[in-house]
Image: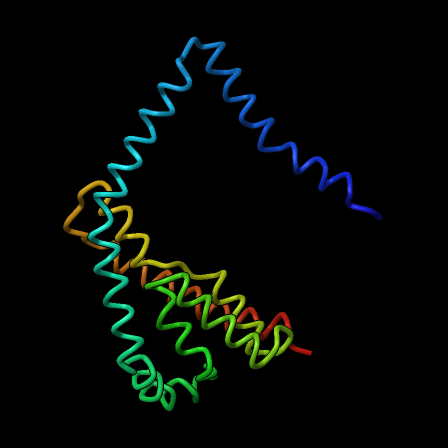
Length: 179
């Protein structure tokens, strides 16, 4: 069955969405262009507010990776995680995922290239990538944009959620793909 009609319909989704927004603005007598410009100004202010937080976090992450600390930490932790059934190949992904989506995606891409997407490592990495979040990145952006300095329980809860996602990825992935 050809999906050409779906591709053709997909090309019209964004213009139709914009037409609906402009139609609603016209109906409600809202100056759409002025509202757009005002929103863009607010977005730029938000970007300037969170930029120092992002630069700090990304610089620390780059130093962590480039210095070899990630590799050393992975080598140190591997003997403790192996008896638990946690593949040591997935440790860099588990360690980087709370910090950066791009860095963790690079690890997933490397694992897919080395082991293949249909391997156990590839499947578990894909599930782990989709089951966890970039906790520190999200907290940096959202808390930085509204000026929250004390994160209270957000970091703990986010990391517990990431640990639950990693554990669920291992258990569900092995259960679902076991022969």
